[in-house]
Image (cartoon, rainbow, N blue to C red; front, side, top):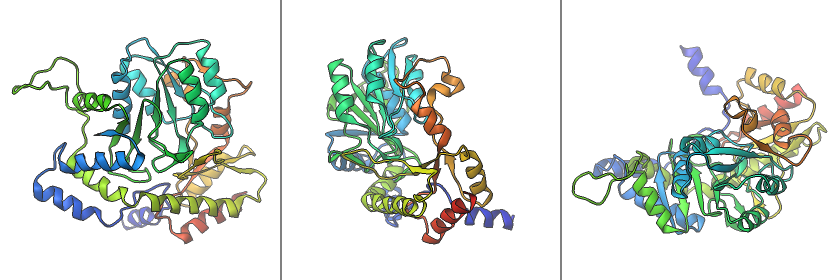
Length: 375
């Protein structure tokens, strides 16, 4: 048992939670007030504070980013059999939310300059389908190319849902990720740049959307003294106690972004001389949080390197497996403009390195040394 505890303690994690030290006071306040169930004053304040930070009119604090994606599609009137375009290189939740409704995900390839949705592939997809919405993921803390994507979607009169689960704190042309599109979602999962242990938020400048989201997330209860239900609702609201954690975390978000960018730069400075390594680029006009430091190994050894790092008690992961390669979605259409899929290329060669804002300098040095030794 002692050996197991020490092994876990000494492990270098990919992106562990990083508490600011101010969480306990706000949690204590929630407990003393007896507001520990869903909703409460900390939820209200957290919604206001995140909205203000992102420059968006309103927000609904929810149980997860996935719940926020699900509700965004419901609010837009997405129905069974509708098509929804979705980034191919993303976490499966982006696609699953579409499937919850019975709609059909159509996956759009990535581009090299941002690793996010390729505008040219998106334009190609519109020649074949008329989707209800387009879900654009901001990958690993990096904004998508919104000038081009917005232009294409506006031309086709189709709304954008921004999946900013991985990019809270990032920006594009000085506008925060989480403020693009008809609606946007963010995540506070345990591995995100700030965390409430779980939870997410739906944001929009259309306050009617957020009013609707709050209703649907509270079992769609009508405004009667008794419990009256006309439409299907969900138990998706955030609890007051985890909102208290989120309020403390939000105050240190910008400092965590600076630390993660410094960690990224340190990896790059120490490893860029190796011709087999390419790091995830930063899109013009964008400011990435570098939520995770992601790089490509161009010698077909990525899995061997990951296994080597794991053997040294260092957590490392492949890049997200593209949705069009997932057994769950293998029969869904995938739109690309290149002969070979960019998202598959990134998956085949990409890996994520320990990037937590509480990563010790000596631990990062160990990661770098182990990568050099392997290569």
